[in-house]
Amino acid sequence: MVKIQYFISLLILILSFNTYSQSIKRIDDTAISLEVLDSEIERLKDAANVHGLTISIVTGDSILFQKAYGFRNIKEKQPLSTSHNFYAASLSKPLFGFIVMKLVETGMINLDKPLIEYLDRPLYTYEFPNDYENFKDLETDKRYEKITARMCLSHTTGFPNWRYIGKSGIDMERPLNIEFEPGSFYSYSGEGIQLLQFVVEQVTKKSLEELAQDYVFKPLEMNMTSFIWQEKFDTNYAIGHFKKRKTIKRRKRNREYAAGSMDTTPEDYAKFIQAILAKRNLNTTWYHEFLKPQIRIESKQQFGKNRSIKTTENDDIELSYALGFGTYKTPFGTAIFKEGHMKGWEHYAIFYPNKNLGMVIMSNSSNAESIFKELLEISMADKWMPWYWENYIPYNH
Image (cartoon, rainbow, N blue to C red; front, top):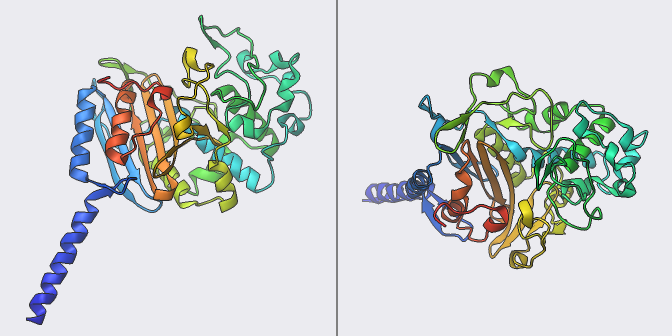
């Protein structure tokens, strides 16, 4: 009788464990079964005609869910895998932010020291391989002398995203302008990130790729990630897709750009988010500074004509920017996020530190953002994402 009761108790324990392990606890403490989650992701992908999509849901020390949907190359009917190499676009930026924080931790960089103090001559006298990368346009605007690493990482330099993108289209001859007082207003800027990369490389005497390998890729075993194209990617990369069935030729970059030259896999980038959740490879003090809101975001939208229009629409979620990531409040704690976007590629990484939970969405399709809002609500029970500010117009809106 005792043996029978023992085996019944053991069976109940096993069944309970299996039931628990087949579901994910969301930020509001409700659970979603992996079966339902998988079905809902498939439904959304099909409804919005997303060509390829990967979802990774993680904690600091475990992978709760990781799966690919759709195609690596739709024309050749090649299925997509979470081990395929993706163009990461702006998911590069917070990883660069982490590298800078490592340099801050070691005392090589001070977040609030004007960047010009690290240089041996005025910034505008340096020359770069491409004219549009030069800072010669700043010679007559001394406000650039105030710009710090903190401003670059929090997108408050006053620079536009890219100098050559304007209301009238792309013009590689357009000068670089400071649009507002450095440190006073959030405005997303790849130019600011590139300025900081230049200074960091001057200070360390190392390339961005060398720094990334030393501080991130090797320690986290992100073996299929690089800021420059690697031969090992040649047989393992996904193709970007645009509109119905148009494929986009993969660009193989041979120069490092902190603002967006990184190639990675969904599996590798999930490791980066796990490391942040677990607070690995950086001391607690600097992790706090890395993820702490630096400035409240007042713009109506992040890009386009509304980027300079002020609003209070996101005050209720305290939409802000940290040092490489955006942040907002939910009733269940802070959400920390970063987007990646380029023609053929749309990504979103988000994590909730006090819930030890994170999610990485990576897609090789130019319409994936249309399901990001609903993906987050279903997977994480997060209904507070500032989707309009992100310009993530839902597919069924």
